[in-house]
Figure 1 (cartoon, rainbow, N blue to C red):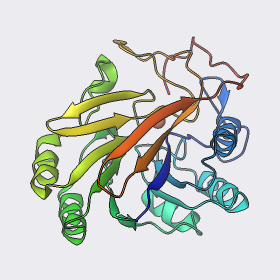
Figure 2 (figure 1 turned 30 degrees about the vertical axis):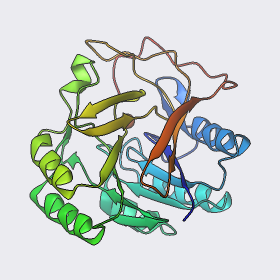
Figure 3 (figure 1 turned 90 degrees about the horizontal axis):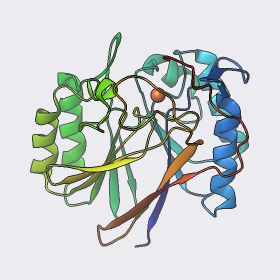
Figure 4 (figure 1 turned 180 degrees about the vertical axis):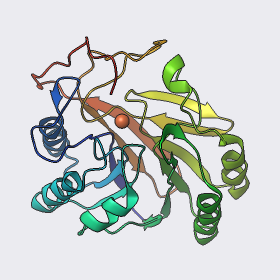
Length: 261
Ligand SMILES: [Fe+2]
């Protein structure tokens, strides 16, 4: 079987129309520019993995705008919710992209988890979600598995956002570790690239398609890094390669006086 090529795009923060901004950056423009960059870099046909905060504030119109954009550009895509999303609104408005919890491609399985917690920016995996995750893993027995979720289970060494890491990460880790063939976890939420290990499992956090957060910052702060994305090549032998790319020609600059989002 051949390699599965994935492009992770995360933390789009789209608004109800194309003029929405976050930290001074027009989020629809930056998302479109990221899509264009993936195409120019030969990844236009990759499966898109959208890892939450697809909307800035749960707006149904944001999901409609995303659905329309993906259809117009003839994209294959799977998604999961973040803390700025509403799963019912996503399911209702991402009409060409049904919600899936597992996705099988080539020799691999992708397990998509909901780590969002009602009315909180922090990560938490509910009892129901843990049950469904175990069911998904059981279906993927014997396959190498990529786990995707919005929140990070590990710190990224930024005090303010590390308080939002998945609260019950130990329970989730035990389940994933026991499965035996979980090869990596990819996350969003932290708006920065950060590679680390969660026990024996590599964790890859990824830059946002709009603004990035300052690395190693005690409090919220925006960074000069431009919009970006992550690519993952999942090989048939169960190994994977991954990397991040940042836009080199995006002219909008974030407003560094921004104090929150
Ligand atoms: Fe975000």
